[in-house]
Length: 227
Image (tube, rainbow, N blue to C red; front, side, top):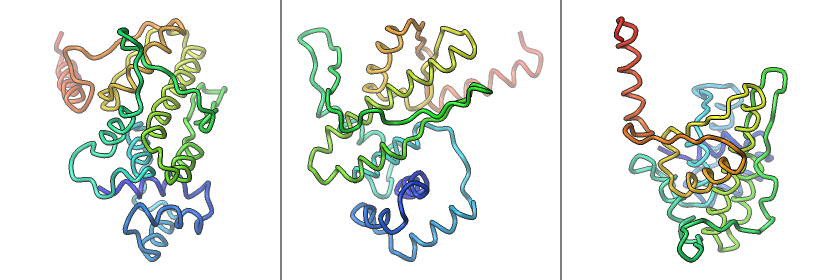
């Protein structure tokens, strides 16, 4: 409901609390008392479940760019973020391929933390989100939104490479609600194919919660002995 809280959760370890609050003041109605309470909740891990959802990172990015305060419908922040990025898109003549922005302000972000022992990895978005926060006042929010999509696509390819190195599997399925985002999907698919992946997408089953429900039905059916 309030994605600024997600943004605080992702940044409170990497920015001094006073500096972070000053950056956030223009984005929400968060009072100093509410902010202090949030920090205390985070430090004590009260009602702060971990998530692997990429959608929450998109929520935080939308909040960082001031695109959403209090969510009024499902996916409001990511939808507005995608719409803002679409303003910045430039397409080649008739191919529909997306050009890549050559700017270096977000270069090498986000970082990939790789545990080679067990093959796991984590996308560290703290520097990326901090850049969105500090550069948004320069007036080119659409460019920052587009670059955010581009950097997440690059990080996703890097993560896929880590998984392939660990497993030897060359096939990759892009599923989950975040892949309803056309810009992210159309950026990512060519990058993956150029790296030699076989890419699979949802066709008959939706990539979001609808697909999850179908999976639950299938699992229960198999549990009951269905063929």
